[in-house]
Length: 470
Ligand SMILES: [Zn+2]
Image 1 (tube, rainbow, N blue to C red):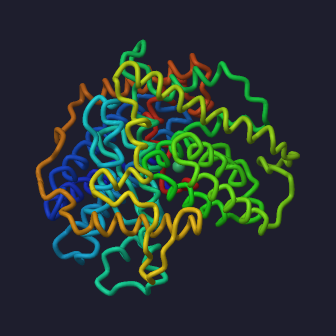
Image 2 (image 1 turned 180 degrees about the vertical axis):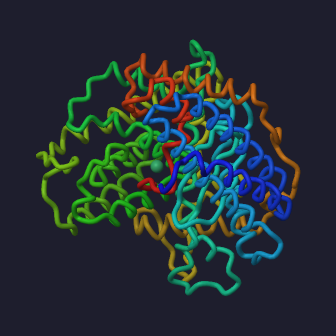
């Protein structure tokens, strides 16, 4: 960054004002978008003031201010996109796509609503890649979806061969929502209103995981994988198999410290299918992955930073399976007993649950593709799943979707006291996480643990445009 970071603060104030004013021109969600901008303004200002109190001569004072400037820019970028893509002057294809995706985010949030202090809404925007901005200052999951999603609303239909796959890019939505849930959910009636992530960590700490690297470092991603797959069904497992295959030879075997190693990630999905879905899905899925693996060049090694380890496949597999099992047991036990809401039991009655909630469908497992071919999970799991998804989404598309209401669904402003309470909550949560031995938040020399927690802002600084998705 050129120049002093704090010199960027006042020019950015004007930019925030412009975005807030522009929100009024959005055809849908205008109130929510304006409220989002207003809250961002108050929150970022309070963050700046907090760090400006560090001594003038502290050489590390610039760092938290610069980081907050970056995050403010990141949020302005996506809020501005969300507004522009909803303006009347924007092509109808954009407006329909984001309105449809907003609905999918709302449905994906629904099972977790009881775990949030207030009702959370979803706002989507079209972006270069699927991602989520976990923001602390408003009850909003800001979910990015890729440009290819626009194809779903183009007037000229795609060629029949592609028509069943155009919905694929919406499939990452429940996973992205899973990140929001991991960062914001609190198990009801837990002592001290404990964050879900800390509850999970404490229980996982009691288990012995012997593999290297320790799979608990992938906890957030694995949680999002579980949440996304339980909601979305086998199609999510297929999509995530395919995403791993996009990796280069070395990436495929690399531990990036947050995501399960791509070679092993489908094991997470396999375990979810084993536990929650019928045999007729998980068997073909296992065979599909085995076939894909057999086609790729492979060495039994793992790359971590500059080091190379021998891959202990059996042990990592065993640990991953145990990890998924423990997380789902915790969710079933803790949430089931206190709230009588066992999301995973109530949600897995149909094979693809997430769109099914809004679209009544034929539960038959045989479907007809646009070319007239009939497929079942056993005959071609891939075509079956994408075909099923296309049927469901086409059906959903023909019903009213999106919110026409332009008033805000949450209070448009946040007071300074509320922001201070929020900052205190970040510090309290981080203290609980530290006490549990959780190691997600970084330590930064020169900043106290409380300052790091304030800067990290409950996950605001984790998932950003530069993260390695999904
Ligand atoms: Zn993710």
